[in-house]
Image (cartoon, rainbow, N blue to C red; front, side):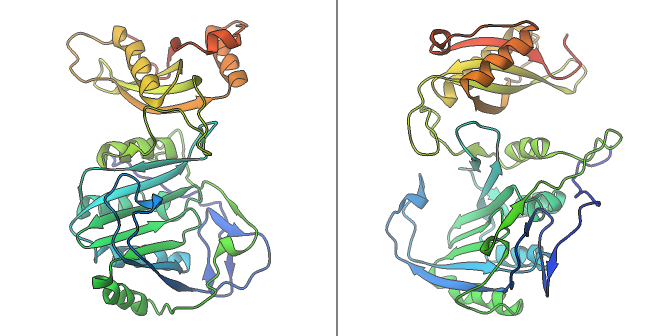
Amino acid sequence: MIPERCEADPTIERVAVDEMVFPLGVYPIEPMEPKQGYTLEFESADGDDDSGDWEEWPDRYVYDIVISAERLPSLVQSLLSIMSQRLYPILDVLGRDAFREIDPYISYEHLALDQFLDGLIRFKDFFFEDGLIGFGAMSDHPFLYIFVDEHKIVTVRAEPTIKQRVESVLRAFELKEREDPAGADSVGHEHRTVLRTADDRPDLLNVDEIVERLRDDWRLLLNVDPEQNMDDRGRSLGITGWRCVVRTPGNSGMNRYSEVLVTAGSLREAEDLAADAVLPEMDIEQFEEPVVVSADRIGPKEFAKEVGRVLGKTRSVNQTELGVSKIWTRRWLTGESD
C-alpha cells in the first residue's frame, strides 16, 4: 500500500525577491524590500486571553521571525529540538464556516515530539507551502510556544530560562534582531492553496483529507465553545444551519462518508444530530461510533438551497423552520450505501 502524502502543484511558479524566496502559497503583489530577521519583546505573566483554557502563561520573550521559505523547515525543526518530548499540537485552517474565517484546532492531550515531527515530514508541502494553513505546538515544561502562521512568519514565545537556547538557534541561521523584518505580509500580498490532487494518485491527499488525518493522529479538537453558537465577533447566532460530514465504517472495511444537513444552536448539538442521523444505517455489529469529520455553519439562503438540492426538488424553507433544531437531510458522499 502506497503511503498517503501530499505534494505541491509543480506548475505553480515560486516568487522570489532579491535573496528572499517566498512560500508557494503566499507571495507579495507589490514592490518590496524583503528583510530576514526577528523582533524581540517581553511579555509579563498576566493570564491574558491568548492563554484560553490553559494555565496562566509565565513571563516570556516573544520572537517574530521572518526567514526565506527554503530555510523555514530547518528552522522549525531546530526550534522544536528545544521543546520537551511531549507537546500540544496546534493547527489553523481557513475553513468553510459562514460565520468564522479560521478553524482553530488544538490538542489538550500530550503528543510525542517524534509523532508531531512525523506529521510535518509526511505533509511537508501542506505545512510549509500552503498559504491557508498555520501550525505549531506548545510545551509547558519548559514553556515554549512555536507557531508558523499563514504568512509563514514564525512566532516563538519562550520562558526566560530558555532564551539563550532560542537565540542560539537564530544565530545558527544568521538571523539578527531588527526593528523592521519584512515578509510577504508587510505589503499587499495574496494567499492560495497549493496542493496537487489527481484521480490516478489516491496517495496524494487534499486539504480536507489531511486535516481529517491530523485530527485523528494528533487528537485535535476544534477550539471553540461547543455549547455556544457565536460568530467571529462574539455575537450569539442562535439556531443556524449546519453542513456536517460524518465518517462511519463500511462493510468493505473502508470508511464511508455521509453529508447531514441540520439546524442546531451549538456545535455539540449539530454533531449529536449528525451522528444520530447515520446511526440507523450502521450495522449492529459495528462497534465504532460515527465520527463527525466537519461541521460548518451555512447562511439561511444557502442552507435552503442545499436542502432543495439534496431533496431533488424546490424546497421552500421558511424562517420558522430554521428556528427549530432538527435533522433535514442525509446523503452518502461515497459509493457504498449498504
